Length: 190
Image (cartoon, rainbow, N blue to C red; front, side):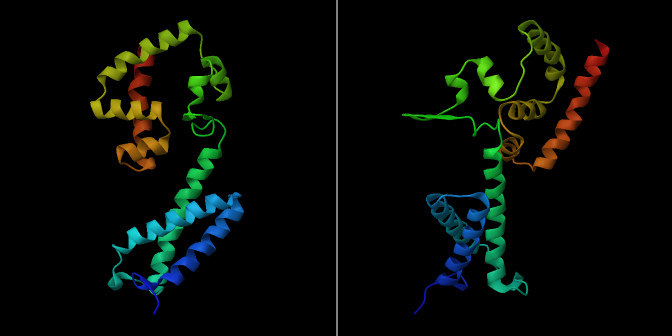
């Protein structure tokens, strides 16, 4: 007697996951242990999604199509995160590992070396002080939710900030574009 994972035999789900993991592993050059971790994560995702499975809403692809959709969405998120980690200058790509675990590069290098590694050219200290003073007044006039939004973007990536704030990335970008106006108006007045 075969085991079932929701409406599908477990072996069918395993086969789908193995096939999808092999494809993405080949494209991204994942090591064997990374493939195993990804396969486990996908199994968990499928199990979590099966609680939302409604046979009445399944299209012509049936339960297999439902599981494929869950896997494709999970793999798209994985691929996006994997590419973000590989980008030069991303917070995750420039961390170092010590005996105590990962350590942000900013704690093991001087600020100048850290900025150079991130390809960031810092302004001279006087100019930086002037800029900080220039944004104080327009920042204080913003709503607290907008101030929080700006703080999140200053301290994390757009994707992470959107996730923390519980809004889509496109909405976050739209809000940031809207928030430029008060700063531009203030700059025109001074």
